[in-house]
Length: 386
Image (cartoon, rainbow, N blue to C red; front, side, top):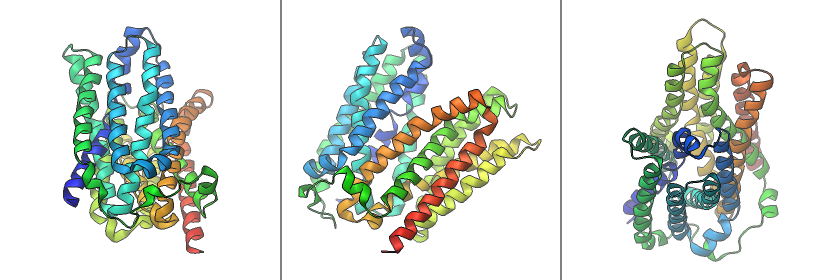
């Protein structure tokens, strides 16, 4: 039964990644058809992120009342409905409307699934599962590309992913009896949900939130501005820059599968330290002002590999750091902090690049990476001082 359930959870993590890269891959066509400028994609993205932040903060209450299985199934259903709504939209305001349930579904399932896995499975599975998210995020652009090049239209691309999500929803509802597996945290669904003020007051939570904010901001900014930095500052061709920007995400995904093989032995804390150290080496390679484009290009891939273990390790260590009875609430706030970082900081660097210069890209990444490590170590000291 446990093996069957983890297979369903793997499918659920693929579903988390499927919608994440659709908007960017389809927007050039959507914007043209709706006569909407490029910046409007950011508006839709921010509405989705806002819904995700809100639902993450309420995930503790929902999960305690319904259980992780039902929250996951209903959230995927909500996301599927929103994707279908996108496919039926013919005006920008309709995209904005459907972006609300899109974000609300994503936040709840992200927090519920991560907490369930952190409580019931090893660090190995946490890394593998987040690797499956990358698989989902990699599949959907190919689906969209096939629909666009085949003349089926972006609506068919969204509709195809919506159908896949609906099939997954049916599978998840079928799997609900398996989620009643006895765990160390059994019965938490019936206990009192934590208020935000109570969560913030937990020992070390503030350090953890800052660390997670900075890490997710660094990962998002690294991916978003990589091609621009390579092309505008390092003189790399646009085609090569785009391909290596894609390799950054491949590095994260592949790195998580590799990390899953060793994470149980190394431990969450050391996985975070190693990941940050490798990412820092990659940032240094990107920054070095040498006439060797290969060093800068491959440095970007190294950053992705370094990013691979950090997110899963922070999540997996949460029950141990803050207690199983607090983990769902803490992970919900973690998700809100993460989405705030990846929503706010990449546009902030865009402003910095406009007014100062895109040459600050590696320095921006380094500051965020260093602060994430400092806050993570501060959390460790706080936890150890109990």
